[in-house]
Each structure stands twice: as C-alpha cells, then as structure tokens.
Length: 605
Image 1 (tube, rainbow, N blue to C red):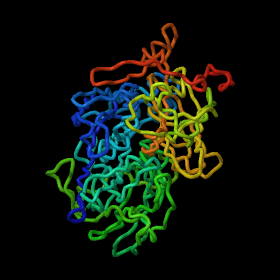
Image 2 (image 1 turned 135 degrees about the horizontal axis):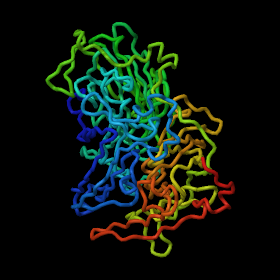
Image 3 (image 1 turned 180 degrees about the vertical axis):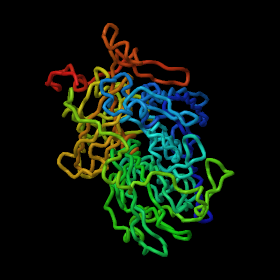
Image 4 (image 1 turned 120 degrees about the horizontal axis):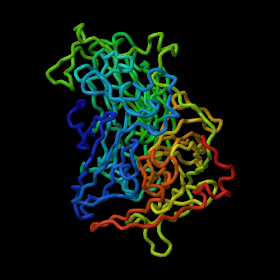
C-alpha cells in the first residue's frame, strides 16, 4: 500500500504479517528489547510485555494472558500448536459430510493436504496478536505492539487456481502453493493521536476511552492502493484503542457510476470464522475494537482510472460509545465533530500491478493468463446456498448457564485491601471504575489472582449471557481461547452477519445483551474474558476464568493434552529475578459445585 501524499506516512509503522498453517506448529520466541528504565517511555507505556495470540486455540501458558509477562532483556517462548479445536472429541465432528476429514486440514508445500484431527467447522483464518500486559494494554498496543496472522487451512488455502474440491479458491493469487497475498489483503485500522511535536500521544488519565484524531490503514494516513479490475479479499481489523468504526465502499470517480454510489461486496467471515453462506452487503455493521470482518469485493465493473473510497460512516466523539452512523453522502462531506468520519483509503483501478508474492511477476488485466480464477459468489450455486463456505454448528442444551454483567461501579477492588497492591502491579492507577458481575453477585475489577468462572472439564457446553449494565457506553467483549455461536440479543435486532455465527468479540450495545453458546476445549489453565475497549480493560474490566482437565483415574484423563490442569493453576507473579506463585481466590459464583448459583444438575452435552 502506498501513501497518497507526501508526509502522510505517520511513522506509526505497518504491522508485520505472519503466515501460518494448520498442522505446522510455531515456536514464537518474543524478545523484550524495551528500555530497562520504566521512565524512558515518553510519558506512557510499560516496558513489560505479554503477547496474546488473538484468538488462536492454544494452551493457557501460550495464550498471553495468564499474567506471565516478562521484562527487558528476556524472552518468552510461546508454543502456538496450530491444532484444530475438538481434536479429542470425534463424537462432535460432522462425519455426515463426506469430505469432513479432508476439510480438517492444512495445505502442504505442493498441492496436497495435511490432515489435522478436529472439527473443520471451527477452522480459523484472520487472527492477530498484541500485547496484553494487564493494566497497560492500551498504552502498549497504541505504541504499535501488535501484528497480524493469517492462518491457512485446506478450505482457506490462499491459492485461487487450485480446484481440489476442498479449497474454496478465495481471491488470493497463484504464485505460491499456499498463502498468496496478491489479492488477499490485510487492512489494520488504527486510531493514533499525535502531539504538536509529531510524537505519539496518549492520555494516561482518561478512563472513559481514548480516541485518536485520525484513522490510519496499515500505518498510513489516507493511503491509496492500486487494484486490478477483479475480485479481492480484504481482512479488516479494528486495531484502535476505543474507537468503533462502520465501513462502506463508495465511488469516488468513475466513467460509469456516479460519485458516492455504494459498491456492493460479500461478507465471508466474522472474527476469522467463516459464515455458512456469503452475505451480499453494501455496508458493514459497526465494528468494535478487535473485531475482524473479511469481505470480497469485485472491482470488475470499473476501469483503469476509476477510484473507490473505503469510508468510515460512524461518528464518535466520546470514548465510551459511538454517537451515530451517517449516510455515505454525509460521511464523504465530513463533519467538524469527528475528523475520523469520511474516506480513509482510496482504491485506484489500474491495468497492471506487481506481484507481492513473486516480485518478478507483473499481473496485467489485459493478459488472459492473468485472469481472475477466484470464486464468484454471484454464481447461482452460491446465491442459492447449494454451495457454502462451511457448515453450521448446532445449538444444544447447555450443561450450565452463566450471566455476566459489564458495569461501572465505584472505585473497583483491584488493590488488595491490606497491602494496597494490585495483581499484577498497576502503577499509580487510583480508581478502577469498570467492573464485572457474575451471576448477579458483587462487582469486581481486574485481579489476576481471582477466578470468576470455573469450568470443570473440557467438552462441556455452556450458554453465556453478556449484559451491558448501562446505556451510556458500549463494550466490545472478548472471550479468550474459544469462540461462541451467537444466539440472540435478548429480543433486539441481530444482523445476519452475527446470527448463529462464531465470534470471539461481541459488541453489547448500550444497555444491550448478547447470548452465545460455547464449548470449552482440550486445554486447561487460566484464560480471561474482558472488554476490548482497551481503556476500559485497563481500568479494569477483565475477569479470569479457569478451565480444568480430568484428573488421574478419570476415563478422559488420557485424551487431553493438558494433563497438569486438573488442579487450579497458581498465578505467576513475575519479577526481574524470577517468578513466584500465588494460590488464587475462587469466587463462590464461579464454581458450578455451588448450588446457590448453579441450581440445575449437570448433564452431559
């Protein structure tokens, strides 16, 4: 992607992209080369880091949010297994699909597949990773501590010319055996703010939600991107701190279409999970922090010299929630209330582009050898539903239900009432207004040594209802490790891009709620659930949940790859000289054995 004009590079930096594939584990050694002196941070940011792979199916020690942060001069080895969920539960695999075993796979280096045990309906695609140092996530991510990851599979191979009956042939390219990115483009949208000296700025005292004054795409302000008149896949990530967005495509100039005409596209994935059928749209739903939307845009109706804008329609002047959505016409005119409304990226139609995957190759729209070989979702087989991207995971009766309310109440209880210290260290933070209530009990703010939900064993299905406890704010709530099948919004409107769709981030809407089904998986250990408005997260809307695995003697003990977790994990307390361990507190409302909060007898789902 190229900057539109001189000086529009921000210095913020384009995020790196890691290409990964199912069946090929990664050992990610993350070095901390930040200054030893905490004060050498230009006013904000903590020099201790913890990398969360959002939302890969990994063990807790490699999830990046079990309080195992590390210090300058050290490294941490994350074991990203790139396994497929439900590998130990063949009873839930969709064996009625004759190709289920081949769909549960990763691409090999040729044109074949590497089979991976698990449920192909839980394949993931568009992921990212970012810092997750509790109490300082917003500051560290704002400074650029995040990156992107595309996870490739047999169905989502990243090669559009291979028709093996499994590969969906999504727009991508043809130069590589897998992982082509010529026509499969990541768009990371950030919301930085800068001081009058041109340095990144952050208000460490803002507890409501920090808003920057520009929207950047892959680190550039108002860039342009040259595209051929063909289909492209765009993987759109909201990587802001607190800003919500709502995107549409609109004509800037064209010999055929009037300025401001909406450009249609197909929605294919939400938070890295395929929807069952591609959905034709002309604008996206609101997109909260950390949500990922994958779309396919066909530029074939345009000619070289035409251009199309990617437009933000959502006005937001308060870090707690958006103000309102504007029409395309209103957004393109701009508003003095919010500089982030309007065009944020220009697509310029050209006749030829250089390949990213093979720089010696130049694609030419006039060359028949370079024709678009990707799937056309306007084909009747796709429009009628005869072909699909994946299959639906059924809703089942849960073993138990939990109600989790995200609220604002008092100064929080993150500091120990005797020592005055937080777990982990929270610096000089004086108040923690953002808190969480579980099953109607007292509100609590972030304490890494407190368990708010205890899941007794892998494989059990639960239904969680997330409630926004107020109308003056919105919360994009993120569940680590697992995705949930979105069921309803308490009677409120639910868009087709969410209904029965797997997600890991849910916007609650002001005074709203959302219910989802989740089956917790093979690994055990400490994970978290939190608001991904990272300012709210840091002040301190985050709860720990603990997943237990079967103990020795249990018939299922041999199935799990996470055997040590039949006991509750002790909390690591890192120091520059090593780690000490602390026995966690388990809230009464967390434990299903407590019949006061879990009155229904547990039955196997």
